[in-house]
Length: 99
Image 1 (cartoon, rainbow, N blue to C red):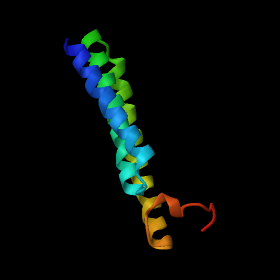
Image 2 (cartoon, one colour):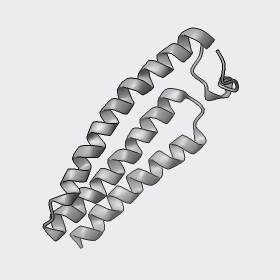
Image 3 (tube, rainbow, N blue to C red):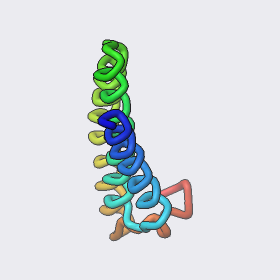
Image 4 (tube, rainbow, N blue to C red):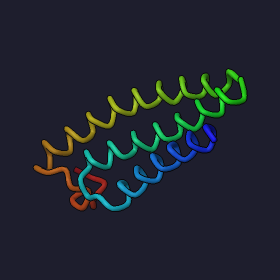
């Protein structure tokens, strides 16, 4: 029963993040939803690691957290530059590849 609950929470967290990325137009909200998706995957990996007694899931979570930290730094820098250049953070304004 506990394993199913952990999997359900992880999958629900991932699905909420995926829906947020698909539905929302604000770049910061989409950025937060991507982080939510990564955390949903982390929950599932940690659940598998705990219930099966393996260390590999925890190692994968550590790598995902490192990648998420780098993604947060780079993503916020891009969003800040986009806001300064275009005056808004709606992704509809990002229709050109050039500034």
